[in-house]
Every structure is written in C-alpha cells, then in structure tokens.
Image (cartoon, rainbow, N blue to C red; front, side, top):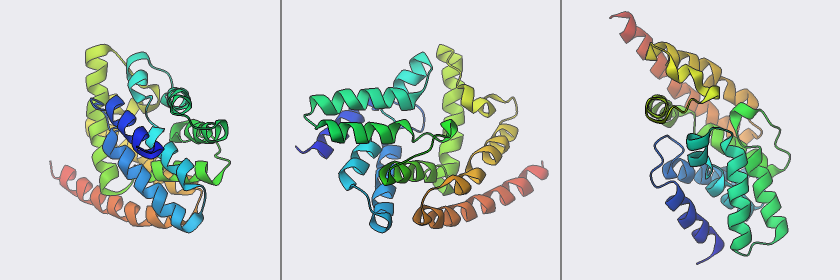
Length: 212
C-alpha cells in the first residue's frame, strides 16, 4: 500500500463517525478539485494529495475540545506521516499547507500547493454542494451544542433562532466573499460557475419565503 492509500485509509477511519460536513466525502471532493487545479497551475501532486487527505483530520478533536482543527490536523498529519516513513521535507511541506488552509483564519498560503489546497477547500463551500454542506453543518453544530455543549465561535450564525436568518448571514459572510480570496485563476473560473448556482437558489428561496 503506497503513502496515498495508507493516508486515505487512516483518515477514513478517523472521520468515520464525523457528524458535520468535514467528513470523508468532503475530503474526497477537495482532493479531486486539488488535482483539477493542479493540471492547470502545477505544483507537487504528492504534497497536494496528502495535504488534501489530511487537512481536516483534526476536526473530531475540535468538536470535543474546541480550538482550531487546522492546527490539530497539522499535528496529527506530522505524527502520522513521520510514522509512515515520509521524509522531513515532505512532512514539513504537507503540514505547512494544512496550517494555512482554513478560510476563517485568513492566513496567507505561500507555496503553490498551499494556495491550491486553500482554493479547493473554499470551492467546496460553493455551488449546490456548498448549499447542502452549509445546511447540514448548521444542524450538526446545533446538535453538538445541545449534546456536548460545544460552540464554534467562528460559526455563530448557525445558532440563530430563525434558521433562515442564520443561513442568509452565513451566505453573505462566507460563500459570496470566497472568490475574492482565491489564489488561482483556475479556481476563480470554477467559483464563477458555482456562485451562479447559489444566486439562482437564493433568488428562489427569497420568493418562496416571502409567500409565507
């Protein structure tokens, strides 16, 4: 089993019961978009795929303890890759990509691989998938607050009394700001297509809710 397969198996086990939208399907989509962007923008494909697979592996710890899953993921990735026999240069490159991937932290990605990972992760918050993920995430965050008391400070719109209001606030503060924060032209082209889907949906949602 090569390093990519070992990593995929490890991450799928860690995220097996992940209740929010940082689950294995998200990981697979981010990896796929990384590969698509890489075809146009270049970079080290092995670094990209490993970083994509491991970028959210710390989310379970965040749910249980609070804190920042990007930092947790980088720590877990470093330990896993070192035990798996990866050389220090590869480990350092992958973990640096993971540390800067998170939208809400606003950190600058320096390497092309880190920039592509940022872009791919952000693109998964757009389009039909982005709408689906945002609604599932709101439900999961509400459930986690109710069951174990965890509150995600960077996602307070998930806890509004009126879920329509919370959803609208989320859309204005994340998806519609994503394109301006993308690093690559390839990612911006993908974003345009997906944002068109979101605008169409929101227009229909506004019409239907006004009829209540």
